Amino acid sequence: RLFSRAEGVKPIIRAMHEGLPFFMLPDMDFGAKNAEFVPFFGVPAATLTAPARIAAATGASVIPVIATYLPNYQGWKVAFYPRWENYPGTDVVAATRQMNAFIEARVRETPAEYFWTHKRFKTRPPGVPSVYAAAGPNTLSLQD
Image 1 (cartoon, rainbow, N blue to C red):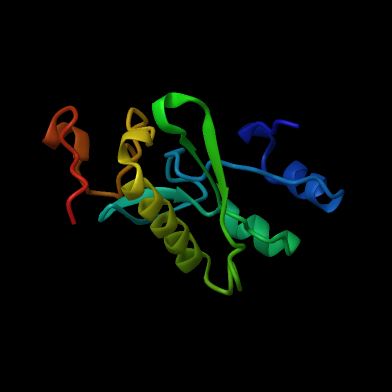
Image 2 (image 1 turned 60 degrees about the vertical axis):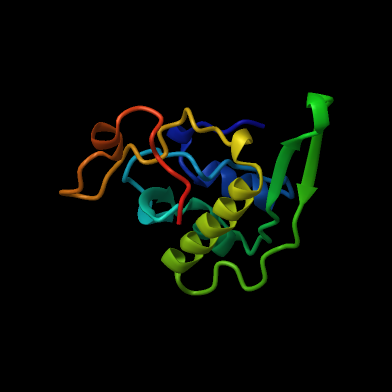
């Protein structure tokens, strides 16, 4: 079942209590609402806290899943990583930071496959200028 952001989190939690698995792409910029600014490639990024909040509300395990291309684009390799122990813990911001660090590490493994056309850093903390306006197109670097 697909869930609309407009529905909020309650239908997701209800479905999970019914035993349905839930999959989300948490590295998209959906604005500052229900998000925290945590580092992603060293840049504060508005990151949804929903994965941590949903895990806390349902007791569900978080099992990261990453899909990468097979050589010569002959299909996909889907990797299921070990479930995160003690996630989210008692600190939603720390859990969200942990999630971004995991995603960043996977992106560094296969940077050409990341969805760079999504403006991941579009939403800025108050008073912080746009990374896109200052840098221009295609100049955000993966350098540490």
